[in-house]
Image: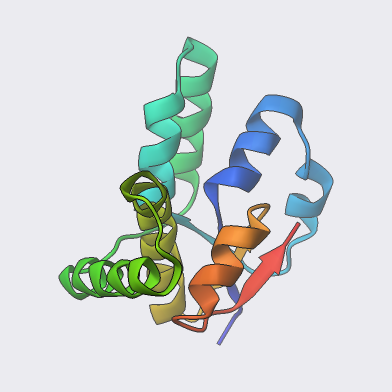
Length: 135
């Protein structure tokens, strides 16, 4: 089976705004897949016509992985454990929720998740293991 990767929002935003990581993205030796959660985050922040065109191109370029009903339930369970273990405020848990969904979706497909958000995704790995690469 070919290796699969999913880019987190942090990498794609850096690329779209500043071309940061652009050279690395072209050298990835894997089948690239989008996360519907990442696309939703990108659409939410697309404030210009150029941004929207970029997100649309990305959306149309690669197949999309989407969290399942079980992923939503499991994400809530993981966040509840994080709150118990770390005493996070509701805002922090909301900020982590989409990242947990992205990680769970990548995990079920055996995909490597590529991110610039080391702290949050390493925290998530304490609760569910998945393949992670930090740029």
